[in-house]
Image (tube, rainbow, N blue to C red; front, side, top):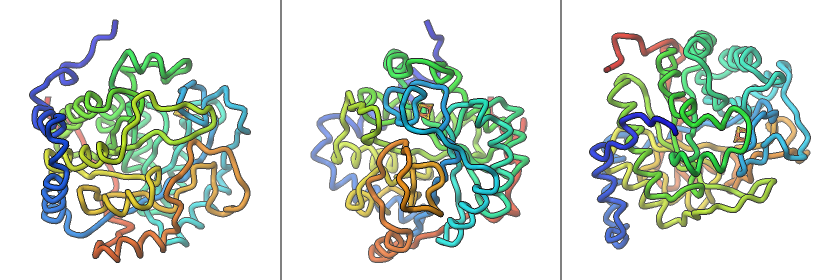
Length: 357
Ligand code: SF4
């Protein structure tokens, strides 16, 4: 039996979301959209900040049923060497990208902490902003990563329902629900400035997921009040392994969820990735969403060699070029921005004095 943290079951932290996501509010979508757009404009202006993922490695020690990189998949394993990393990052830079998210699978001997730390150091020399989406680490490891130039991490809980989580994660270190749940806090305690959280929509009952996600965000915002917290809304995509979502989330519900988070949390960055279709992404930009990925490749590397197919974690839906996507944003009178943090601001932000206990 897992002992859950108190915030997870504190309904006062999600009461507003509960109202906004109640079934009887389904007819209020247009009103929610208008309210979310007005709040977004007031708090963020017309800016959409952009980033691009770089998959460093697809080695993995875990068995997540919904992932094309799970360790029992037949897909060939590969990792970038340091020279390849530099070339890939330089190719990304040539596309105008200056905000990179470095990804790996769960910790393995092929791609462990030392590998990731060195990758961050290489990326920080090329990109003004470097974040990682990798395996859970210790506070000391996050401190070392921050010292190497990492300013942000993304870590999705995947499912906030412990029972579903157990059924979805069949082997490997990712089976540890609590270790993952506590990862954003360890990262912030280690000096990482911003964390992105989310649930992988489709794995568990979506309203329940949205409410616990909201509690998580509020807990983090209150405890680490100087940190940047962002929320992503990934939906399951087709992948090798063929997992079909147990709780499919349609566009209408996802749109309502995004609007509800914007209305309830006016200052939090809301993120939408290239998992989503061009039409849905264009529709959501500025209506709550303030941060988006572009030109994503979900194979290892992929910015230099765009022809050779590789094993991908999932299928991308919006495969427009950086230029085409930026033009679509401009057509909506939104302003794509590739960098919002100057490297001079890099470095630890959170210390004992900035944690509310
Ligand atoms: S989701 Fe992450 S930990 Fe799970 S199998 Fe895929 S790469 Fe490994």
